[in-house]
Image: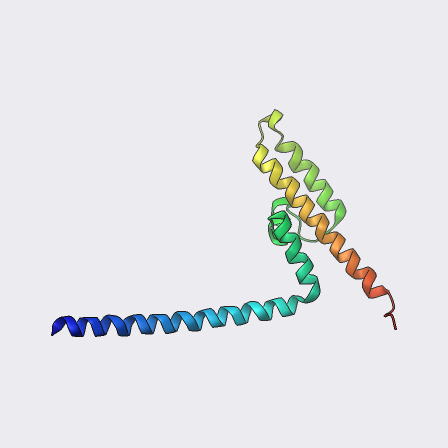
Length: 126
């Protein structure tokens, strides 16, 4: 008899946890969809660039220590970090490659922004 009650308690517990998990999953999907909609079309290109490079825009900015996308600042920080992490001066090839990937990711983001600016400036075709 006790085994029957124990089994019922376990089943009820699993159902409660399952419902909570399903609800949390639905909320996460809704939040993800809302964030994607907020990013708009530019977000799709930027997300694709993140997937290709393996770095998000934020990660690339942190690696090169840049707060805004300035080509001069990116180049200056890239050159410094690349030299400091050169294997011949006791640096790390891994870190040097991260610096290169971060620069590539930021340059891709600059290219995307320039393309969007050009598209905004063009009059709509009728």
